[in-house]
Every structure is written in structure tokens, then in C-alpha cells.
Image 1 (cartoon, rainbow, N blue to C red):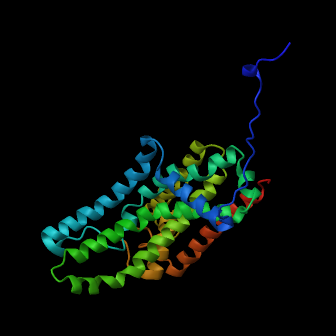
Image 2: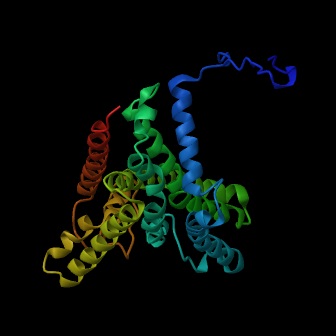
Image 3: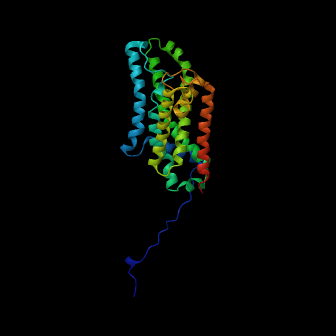
Length: 294
């Protein structure tokens, strides 16, 4: 019995072609992780609900700067709501919210779904992965620690009648603005990632981050009210107060609302405390990811 030509099987050559394009290697892989992490942190390429917290906190962080600039345009420098020194402290409540909501997006799912061996197979290592995630979160946090203060700076210059004179008066504050913003962003991002890397679920990670800041803030306020020498300990229970003390040590300018003001502690100690906080966070990340099998 012969087989009909129409029913005969046909063999197609679907062989894979060897990739002949550029190989970006380790640097390209790290850049891709940073880019993807930054997009995830800002909710880009995702649903509208994923953008509420990152963009909402950014708008709320920029709003006081806009109001301060508007008042300066209308009434001059008679009323000064915010200065370069107290701005980050004034919007400090937004920082834990942002980190608690967005830091788990970067690390928790990778750990929970056991995809890290795919990352570490080649061409990056554990340190590269951690550095890329840390860079992504730090860049996102800079939107709160640096961008609003730059808006305040630009508003002060542009609102002046003598533009060049105002620029000359204000430009000396730029090193402190950039330095403070970078220190806050990097240390807080390190702390947030370290906490989240120890959690098994995003909800637990977010709760742990908020607990560190909220409980630390409550303890700090309580110690300030009790007094009797305990006010000198108060700043060291709150990561934001530690960073504000480091900012004062490096760049000057006090903040009346900060527990650093009434603590009576030498400012270099805050720099040491910041180094310890950063070192502990990075050490936690190193130990956590060293235990991940490839």
C-alpha cells in the first residue's frame, strides 16, 4: 500500500544559529541588572499600582521644595521653610516607606524562587550581583535625598533678581548637597537590602524595614523626653539621626528637630556610627549571598 504524497512527513531544519553579535561580558551583565533593578524600583514597565508608592513618595518629597520656592518668589527670603541642611530630615518619614516598599522587589523574589544560581553561573559573581542591586536602589533613593534639594537650590537661584550673584552665593552649598544626598542614599539602601535579604517574603521584608526605623524613632524620642543623660544615646537608635549627625560633622549646619542637637555628643562619633552601620549592612549582604549555592 503506497503512501499519499500529501500525508508524507516533512523534515524541517530548525538548527540553532551560533550567536555572532557583541559579547558584553561582566560589565554588560552588571549594567543590565542595575537597569532592570532601577526600573523595578520605580515601577516602570509594570501596572499602575506598582507606581503609586515610588512616584507618590517622590512627588511628596518634591512638594515642600516647590512650596518653599513659590514662597520665596512671592515674599522673598523673609520666610524660609526649608534650608539645605534640614530638608532631608524634614522629609525623613518618606525614606523608610520608599525603602520598605521597593527594596524587597530587588532581592526577595530572587532568593525565594532560587534563581540566583542562574545569575552566578556566568559571567558575574556574588559581589557583582550585590553591587548592582545596591547601585539600583541607591539611584532610586537619590530621587528623595538629592533631587528635592537641587530643586530648592535651583529655585533660590532663579528667584533672585541678580541671577549670577545668587548663583555665586549658593554654589558653595553644592558639595554639601551632593555629599549629604549620596551618603543618605547609599547607607539607607545598604541597610534596606541587608534587612530584605534575610526575609523569605516581601511582606516580611517590608515590615522588618519599617520596624527598624519606626521602633528606632520611638525609642529615640522617648530617650530625649526622659533626659537624665539618656538624650546622648537617643540619636544612635535612629538610623536617620545617625546620618544627620554625620552630615553635620562633614558639612555643618544643625537641625533643631534632630536628636543630634541636644545630645551633646562629639560629631565625629556619628561618622564612626555611620561607618559601623554601613559595614554591618555590607557584611550581612556578603554573608547572606556567600551561602547561596551555584
